[in-house]
Image (cartoon, rainbow, N blue to C red; front, side, top):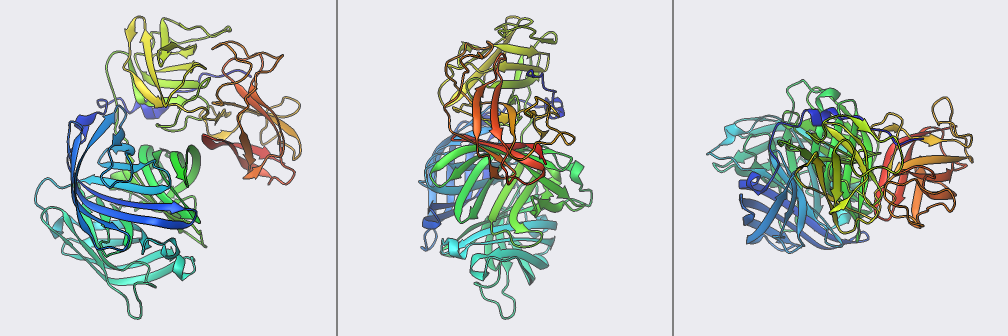
Length: 606
């Protein structure tokens, strides 16, 4: 089996229409909502919510004027200053404005989404541009999909999650709504409640109040969504953001304007920057990205915080979109809105009970472009999985890069070792020359040098003496990605059976048999192999890194080999036994290391 030149994604053919992101792109007044819980196991030891105005100066500085709640205390004024930096591609870092640690996040088209990687803190900050001119109730008109995730008393035993749709009439009324959701104190089961007489008010600056009255016989404990929520309207009217400032009622509300009846799976396509909170026993939060295929598949990269650990998580979920943008992702309530440029995901299931309390939001990523030899800052990928922008690379990994003017012609390496210059194209990673596998004007595939270390890897490509823009990508000790037969990182994995035949629907892996999985991103091996050289057959070059193989969520019982594929360059393989109790049919195939997780590929089992 050979490493293949992977096809150019249409996503990047359509993205070369703007400049590279920087500090100047984040400028002006934004409304924000922030919620943070310090969690140990299933116990919250500290809770904080904040909201108000954050003003960015376009040069790396910000000021905050708002309110914050800590624990069950009444809101207090929040007035701080800080710094931020926007890297090419829209990747953001900022100093903390609530004392919870520095923020990492994304600058999307029309939003900022961020959180901290401080140990034990599960948090989410979303900010949307404030209106630039005076508005009133008439600015809020049309149908909206609304989601909430709340923690009354800052207590997971009281957590609640809702999703509902309501129509604003431009005069202060949202009318009635069927609120669907779940609450831990109500048994955690899916409930539906009708809330009548929902009202709103919008002040000249775009802030306001959304009021959900208590229904007859209901209380704040047994009605899924109730009370007055402070809301902020985005400049384009497509988003509402906010939450309660009632003492101790921590949480977040976010809403997106529904589509005008033209929704479908095909409307949901392209790259989105994302973030979310998830509680199911313990807590998780993430910032990352998602690539919607337009065909019912959503590929995620999430920088997960789980208790005190942080790791990179790549997964595929299914979705469906109705005419108004409502639908489901992985069986849970979902809404595509904001003209197709944003979405919400909740833990509220379409049917049954999920047991997961979730709020996730996504905003379209800003397009990037440049002149000359241009590397797309959102376009350096794991060469097997193509996990979305922000996913890390690892030493020894095959990476595929997209851009413009990368080479004068198309050429693929025919011999080993891989050369460091091909068709006049060379590449450095953190200053070290990298082996090059294949080049074309819009796509280059190469290997990350085994010597690469540090928190990030900076890529610089040179085409016949002309250097590209530098692109910085997270670097981890491992970042697994499985090669697939469709050549896009999704679908049937590149897997051989014991007879060296490709596993497929017509040649399914037998339970209890051994298979060979081909992948990249397992990092350094021993004995070491020179960059770009063929891996030895004797002795084999293996990784000592702990890893788990999951087939249909069932752990594989025996891993016979994990290391470089002998006689080949830039390719890893795992020889593993199919569990005797594995479910049959097409099953998700996942690889878990200490640094990362991927389950974008599948395997047929009989």
